[in-house]
Length: 403
Image (cartoon, rainbow, N blue to C red; front, side, top):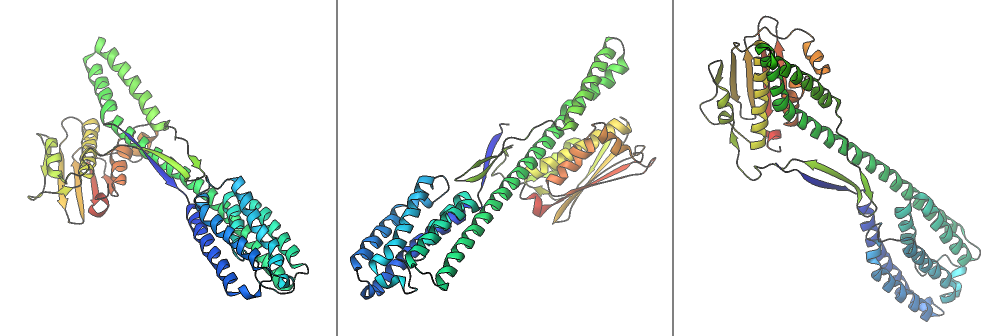
């Protein structure tokens, strides 16, 4: 079954760029409307008209530039700031009374958009740099700044730095989340591979070791070698040597997580009847009891549950002996499916499961509990020495349907 790589992109700042795009258009229209309604107050209206016409063309033409961090280059930011500063300094030329009144500048609140672009692109330091230039331009334009002028300048300076700081924190959180998702995906992949290895290669090596020891001679040497390879492979599986892939960060798209996942070869198909998957386990030493009606589950969930049952039966044969009897009970409760595997073996001594997991024997931890955990279910094991072992596997239908 071929694996595929799924790319997950996360960008907490992309909505900020979209908001900035809308802000620039709306504030440009606002500046134009202010000039239209206050046209009679300008001593040189042609200066205001020329600048605002250029501002409208500049705003609309540069919309792709503020669509993301990649397109918003340093050169563009510098040019955009120059446009804002030029409008502020041209205000007294268009209206000589602007220095004695607390009226709006030609670009009005559009100037804040130029500063916010610095904040989103480079963080609070860039925001402080741009807002300082805007503050100086406003103070020069006013000549003798009033309280309202100082208040507005300070507001833009503080707000832009705060937004820049928030953007930096969001980027750091985004990278941390991407790393966590990558580690989780790698861990799930490692557990899946460990389950597959336990259910196939390790079982064969263990069987070769037992049969070779029983036959003796050259077969005993073959069994010894198989046992050594089994121990080495268990150590490798338990050590979790699968490394996570690199978490990259694209300025325009945010953090990028590449998750290698196993495609479901049954995508788009209907549910499977769990009874049909469990039927091959029945035999002279294994009794299967199931409902008279089908027990439908999504194909992947049904296969994983059947594999967990198979792992439980493997443990019965390995630890309770070939002559041990086992019983499989399937119950369909509507909202969940419960499968119980019980045997008449000697049971599991207290602390044996923890010891086995430490030795790299992960049949219960991965092949059974790991599978049920991935399905959103649970695996409960009850064992009393001398009275056998019972494994209860529960799969909620609501969670299994999304597998």
